[in-house]
Image (cartoon, rainbow, N blue to C red; front, top):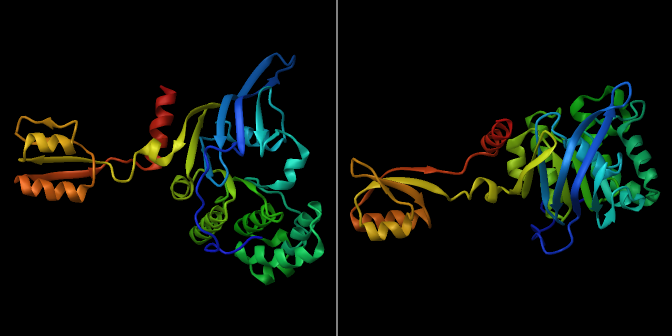
Length: 324
């Protein structure tokens, strides 16, 4: 059952277990042209793993292959080659669909229904008993920030883009899924809506749900995701945790003068001396202890800068490298 953000402790990822999402050299080719003799390859040999309880972010420019990969995982289209598993079952297995939730980038909802009626319809597709629907639907309406008035009395043709996104999120959670796919979940939301959506995702994460999301809002991805992958022109160019890709939040480049060379080398292994007598390098260890040690040596710090780039900076670096 969907509960509040603080209802469960932060889960520990079990990367020794079988991945919830597993692909091996997944590839999709479309034939085009009058004689079907031209090939378009939106996805090229994609291999990735997503583990239970983690929030995984798939990043890329428009046309990079993100939606193609998502459709392959969901069984909407079939791969041209390669293979994959979803919750331990081959891609496209019908039984798996009862255990997943999906929010498309531009959800098409039956606009003559109210939000409440649409959620009842979605619950019916999953054969959720009416007694459970009466409990779950009000919880979801409250969770996504819709008012009872909007949900019960207003047809969805009168909803704003943000309201449609909210009710789309509610239907993605109606079956209390183990694995949730979110395609641009922040799309069309104002800053308050983005904050609320981020809190919903973090709440699902604390409950141990596995979340696979695409997003262009990299600042949100950086706050939400445990691991990310970047697609460029159909190829997976990097993947890993944020600390693996960006460096830890405690990695500094330090510049100073004075101090004992032998002791400094223990703190700054790649120590380099400049012509003016100053030195610089990458600090290893706790910076507070280093500063205290440097004072005892009679040295002083001239500059200290955090080396870790933002996810947006890292993303642009990787995209530019790929286009060279």
